[in-house]
Image (cartoon, rainbow, N blue to C red; front, side, top):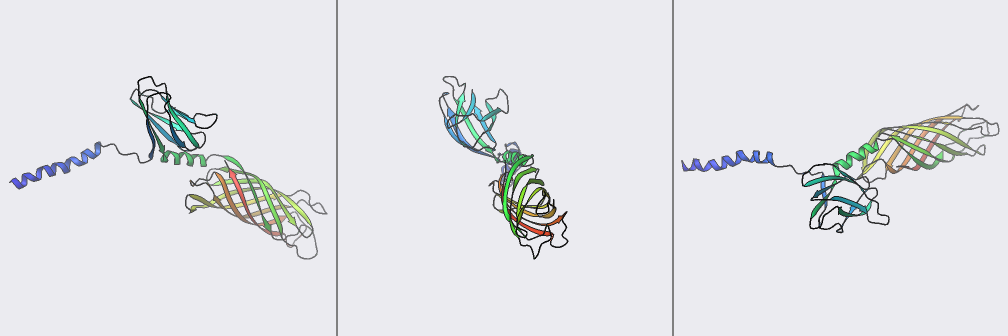
Length: 295
């Protein structure tokens, strides 16, 4: 009988454990504590390293309002928004840094003899959500590249035409993660006959595959279709046009897996040249490498 009674406390503990677990507030693993400091005067300060584009939270226990200001010259304040206006002792604020670097933290409106405690957190989940949303927004940047092309004819000429060099540059646009476009100017040197061709082009791109070949750096493979036209060119003043489908491999240099900022690209296109009298050697293959930047 005594042995059976000894099981009762154990059974009671097993039954109560799940109930106790239900009443426990789960830990927020998305937030990382960066700083905790008590302030007894408006002149008290603390330092924190903040990055632009990262979501931060500030918790304030006590009176006053957190002030987060750039530590350098012309100290511009970070954006601090009261996220939970309430009469409770602990209040939460969103903190958004205008630029990356060192910031000075103070508590404004702190009365003499009162003490306030500030805890500053980094929110990794919200930061990723904001970055994903920003990647889907429309943006305009620039690009520049160089490479070569195989030979083609614009006019009747003796012998086989040779390949030449090619340079391109212009405006890069991005809308969402799947579609982008280039608008620019490409200059091709043609050695036979000896002149250069300036192509004005539009190139829409559709992303086919995306992944991270290098840790924290995203890479994309896109299908492209370049449509180009040139002004009157050569001895007979012909205005050729070009249609060139191809593929572009893009490696983004942002270390957080985003598509904004600088990126390297390499591309291949096979083009058909129209509005020329030639029926032979009026196709070309283009090979390019370049650098793009989208804010």
